[in-house]
Structure formats: C-alpha cells, structure tokens
Length: 259
Image 1 (spheres, rainbow, N blue to C red):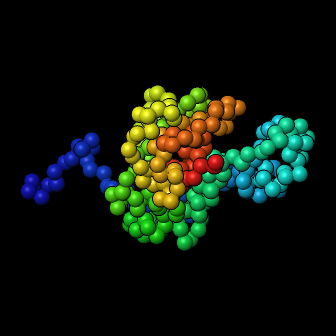
Image 2: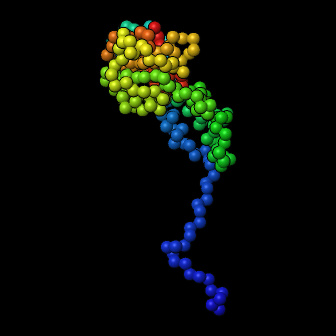
C-alpha cells in the first residue's frame, strides 16, 4: 500500500554515517616521533656521538662537538677531518643549546609515560588537564604569567635591531618582540642622551636585585656573524646578542647579560 512505502531519497542527498573514530594506536604519533629521532641524530657530538652538551664549533669545518670533547683541540685541528681549528677562544652556541634542550623536552612529551599528555588524550578520547603534562620551565612560566594577568615578558622594554640578521631573521625577531609586549625602536638609542636616560619604566621580568631592571632599551646584534659592534652598557641602554634574546623567549625570563 502507498501508506507503507518508504520515501525515496536521491543518492546525492542521502546522509552518510559519521566515520567511526579509529582507536589510538602506537602509531598515532609515529611521524612526530620519527621526525624527532631524525633531529636527535643531527644533535650528536661528532666525537663522543652522545647528545651535544654545550655545543661548539672549531671554526674551520662544520663538525660540532661538546665543549669538553674538544678542549684539547682548540687552536689546533678538528679531530674528525683534521681541518685547522683557527678559533682560539671557542664560544658555546647558546641557540643550538636551547634547541637541544627543547628537543629533549619534546622527546619526553611523546615518549615518557609521566609526561605523555598527548598519549593520555588519545587513549581516553577526552581532553586531559594540561598542567600534569606540559613542558616545564619556559612554557609553564608563560602560561602561569598569562593566567595571573601579569605583564608580558618584554613589558617596559624597547629594542633596536642593528646590522644584518641571517641566522635570526629580523622579521621573526620583530614578531617575538611584539608578542612579548616589547616595542621596536626605529632609531638607535644614544646612551649619553638625557631623553634616553629619563625614560621612566622598569623591566618587570628582570631580577629585582639586579641593575638590569633599570635597563629599558636594548641594542640587539647578531652574535653568530663576524660583526662585533662596539660594546654599550650605560644606564638604561645595553647591548645584547640575538642569541640572548632567543634564550629569554625560550626560558620566559629576562636573563642576565655578561659583563
């Protein structure tokens, strides 16, 4: 009978069932783990083959070592390719050192059962509380700072980017300054100017017992290049390398500057 006939549905309008959620397996984050494993292989000392500790380059080649592994080679030759090591005073690559620490924390995030918040979410299929699994130090301090509505990292700080920037693109540094609540200076600040020294602001995130809290204007240069500008550290105007700036972002702290 016509009353028992089911209405016909055109094929183009027929609703499709929602795809079933696949159970989270061991390979759910396999690509991320594999990528981190490849990165970890690149961050190994060319001499001891362990993960780099205080990485340095001897200057004549591209091999990178732990600082302790080549203490006997400084100023002589590379122990791997025997290229003359012309650098007499080796500096630790702080940017690379920060990357190594971050890589280690990401490895813990994906592998360690105590820190694997991603794995916990996949297994429970619900959002877990991030506080139990978040990366400590810089990221954690950044979150707490925001939750407590405290000033941003570079609040009260002005930055002048001097010279050319290759390893740290200037556009990226400008974005980091803005994200951290700092301001970019178009003109280089003059330490001996009364106007410069009379700016009445204090860096909130500097150590309260240091004279750095009164420094409000930083002249940033790229320390990974051969260019070394004249040192400035007078009153409210200090000079700082770009690697220091990156380290501040990584640790969410206005780190002390070497004298």
